[in-house]
Image (spheres, protein in one colour):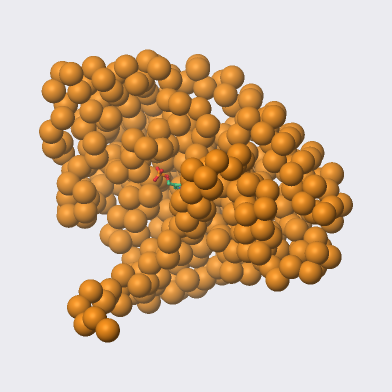
Length: 397
Ligand code: PMP
């Protein structure tokens, strides 16, 4: 046996991996073998960034934006982000209150690292994007789960949070529209929660990365509340709305003192976000989002279609998502009827036997995810139909 020289550290073992990437690797392997895979797996828009934005990136490289930049991001992009948000929400964010990060994921990681101490209580929605829990565990924070229920349209509600707040509460994480359930938050809940955070001295990390994928009504941001500079750490990015997942560009809006402190963490971790990508992103924001309107309509149609098809499977219970591009059906009855062990076995069998990638609900919640699957509907309508047909035929077999 070899010596355990390369044994990994205790601290690194506290991090959990995002399982979407595990399933992405498995589906790529199957594709390589020639299997016709339909993927409802990873949360990635199926459209390319608009051609003019790609052109901007090429031009930025040609004009020499290939070196390091400031850790908090290029001034051009910090300014463009503040202008964009101010226009969108009628607020007055300053460029010094914006930090550009290497993806929204890094924004969440460095924010939680900057704000949480071991033992602090942090309230996290359940089910949720797994990064929040992973980082909280890494830091040694005490996690309190805010269970979301289908009966309440999976909403993050003020009253439910208020019940969980103690004098040790240091942070609450919000994500709306929510991954994996697709719920949104009501304006009154957002407003009441920001007031409560101000009174009780806790931070709100608000991950609003799906703010443009809203199918009913309009997104109400935490930045539209009067006390945001005191309590809010706002996260967004270019991965979803612009289809730029591989460009690794996210951003934070927060109090300028906090923003300046993020610089050291960002500097230690990745030095700076990719410079030519930032120059292109700044121009993309200035051009506005007219091009996105037909995409939103297309995603709404997909939402309606997948909701209808899943709902037509006997034994499946499903909430119609109001935002994001995920749907989180409950397959518990089917799992029992088919004599399967759990949702993981169901996800594995659909992948191996039908080439359909879905994620087990337990990738997003130990308890609330039981019996559930997450489908990302960032796929063509014909593939939604084909994918659900394959699932139906597997269930009947
Ligand atoms: N927040 C949520 C809720 C997400 O679903 C994702 C991506 N799946 C991210 C953050 C990370 O986005 P990025 O690619 O910008 O790191």
